[in-house]
Image (cartoon, rainbow, N blue to C red; front, side, top):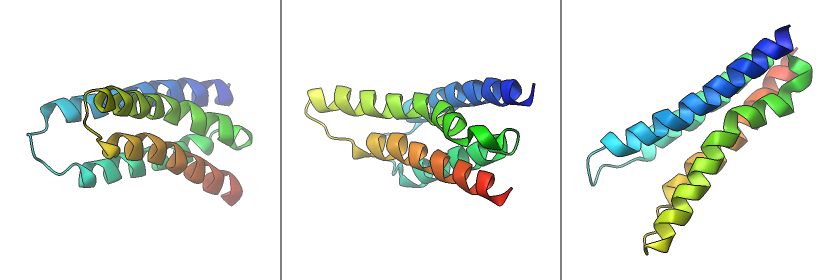
Length: 114
């Protein structure tokens, strides 16, 4: 039952983080520096992956990927969409792939600490 609860929470968390990042991007003023917020989002994804890994340490890789997949896909798609219009917003790749890396690192450290 604990792995099921961990996966359900991971799916909800992953989708929630992706929607939250879209909301932040939409409500941020033009010209604002997104680096601080993106670092915070990446750190939160890593922390959430570590917390959920404590529920099912044997599933740390899958949990980290489930948490970070929506954000990584969103980052890649937004970068590609904006690159088609001639703008290269590298922050989208940084948030997407950084979130995946942070989730894997947080999950690994939480599983190893057990």
